Each structure stands twice: as C-alpha cells, then as structure tokens.
Image 1 (cartoon, one colour):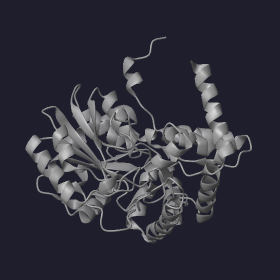
Image 2 (spheres, rainbow, N blue to C red):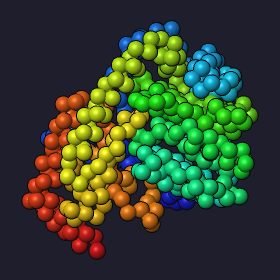
Image 3 (cartoon, one colour):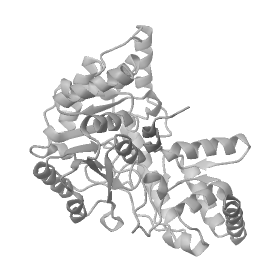
Length: 414
C-alpha cells in the first residue's frame, strides 16, 4: 500500500514517545520519576468540572459553530483585549481542540510551498513539523543562553529574506522558560512591518510567569493586523485533556481557519467550551495557587541542578521547565550528546527527562548540550529525582555499563 509522501515530512512530539517508554517500564515494575511531560500535575479546579457537569446535564453535547460557541468567543475576546491591551472582536477568535491546531491551521492557511518560516530553536517540535508538512522551509533562530534564552536581533535580521512569510515566537518559552523582553518583541514588530510577514505568537504560558510581565507582540502599532495569538486552557487551568485552545487573528484569516476546522474536526466539544468559559469567568484563585507552587518547585530544582557536577541551570522566568546546560557532564562521562544522557537517566536512574534533540533539528554549529525537566511534580518527586540523578552520574560502574550497552547496540546495528 502506498502512503502519501507528505506524511514523511511530519515530525512528532517526542515527549509522548518518552511517556510511552515510562509507562512500559512502570508496567514491568520499574520505579520511574517522570519529569518529561509538560502538563500540570494538579487537578482541574472543581468549579470548572462542575460547569462541565451542568452542561452535560443540559444535554449540551451537540454540534456548535466551527469557530466556537458565540458566548465563549465573546468571553475570550474580552479576556485577550484586557490582558494584551488591544481591541478584539468575537469574530477574530477561533476556538479549537487544544493549542496545536492553531499552529496547524495558521501555517496551512498562510504558508505556500517554498515559503520560509523562522522559528525558535530550541522550540516546541510541532513548529518545525508543521512547516515541513505544509511544504514550507523551516529557518531556525537560535535562542541564546547568554541572553537568558532570548535571541540576538542581528541573527533574526540575517535570516529574513524575500521568502520569509512568518516568524514564530513563544514567550514564556518551552523548553527553556525564557521570556522575550519587550524591546526584542518591538524589534520583531518593526521587521514584520518592514518585510510584510505574519507573526505566530505562542502565548500558551502567558499566565505562568514568576518575574516581570509576559508581553504580547500584538500590542505594537500595526501588529494586531498581522499577529496570530495562540492561547488556551491546557496549562493555565490544568486542562490538558479537555482540549480547549484558541487563536486570535484578523477576521479574514479567522474565516479561513474556521473553514479548516469544519473540514477536519467540525468543532470543539460543546460541553468543554462551557467549562472553559466558566474557567475564565470564575475565580482565578486556583491559577494563582498553582503558579505559586510552581515557583517553589522552580527554586528547588534549579538549586538542585546547579549542585550537580557538570550541570548549570539558569532560573526560568516563566512556564514550568528547567533547561540546564549539561555539556560538561556529557563530556566528562563520555556521552555523545544529551540523548545519551536522557537514556542513561531513564534506564539507570529511573528519571525521565528530555534531551535537546526533542526540541528541533540541531544546527551544525551547535556544540552545547541541554536537557529539559518539567517541575510540575511534587517536591518529594523533584527531590527524589535530583538525588537519583546526582548519585547515578557519580556511579562509574553504571556509566561504564551504559557505555558498553550502547557500544553493543551500535555494533549490532552496523
């Protein structure tokens, strides 16, 4: 049977592959502390679940408009207007099942074959995957550790060409927890106006911030007309499995994106939209409490990582990920890269993390190694994971055993 060639251009979200490994090991009785998946460990707030139950009891389980329930779109428009300081109308909002569809539909609607899309590296892997799938040309923009994982505007300028159709920004950022400063966003805005390209602004972590303020590029003059804001409920309200996200974009583009929704999933589940609407309208106390817990977890994990030989970790300003530089540790232990370290920690220490290869195709000039750890777990799990990592890396017998096993596998493969 023949499969369309375009399927070969699709990447994946490696976090789910690692989750499958974790579940397999656990099914075999292995004790694994998972710091790999990016979702809040806390439960969805009761008032949100109650709203879903009420909607179900009212039989609100049928189709709704592809762009979303009108009342919910109005609530989102008012929320985005108040938080970003821009005017937003309901018909500029499209509700979709999660955040990924905003990436998927926006790129399909805006990018022609051969168009260039600049995206952050490291970054959420679906950016690169969807650019390739749509026939675009992915152009990575390196985020710099010495700039607290923002970018150098000179790098961005050097990558813009007459084929540039979109720049993707993500702040607060996955996987680094970095935040793009307002002046850097302003620089992007000026370039967007000068070179006439779209900006896809992934703001899914906009409420999970510890220092300063998460700024939106949409606030600058002329940018509302060329910005697509991606936001949703998965991270802010611990609703990853509910699948509620939304895009805010110019009305004409919203109409095209809504048609893509019609052609793919018809609509987002009705009762989840009513629950999501109540999430925005109701008390935000659970959000504040969750962020406060994350901040304490952040401080704990950063201090612990910086105490491990060969690790160095900046303090993330937002999201819920630590992204330590592990180059010295990898070189000292004889590991080829962070993928080796990821495998070693999973199978020898019982700790699931993600190596930097999970966050975009490496560039040839890249010589530093990083891993991502999600700190949404309990402090007990975080402390336990740090203890395991430190002790296992110090165990020369386990390191030699791992390197021998890797050599055997490589020999068999050849």
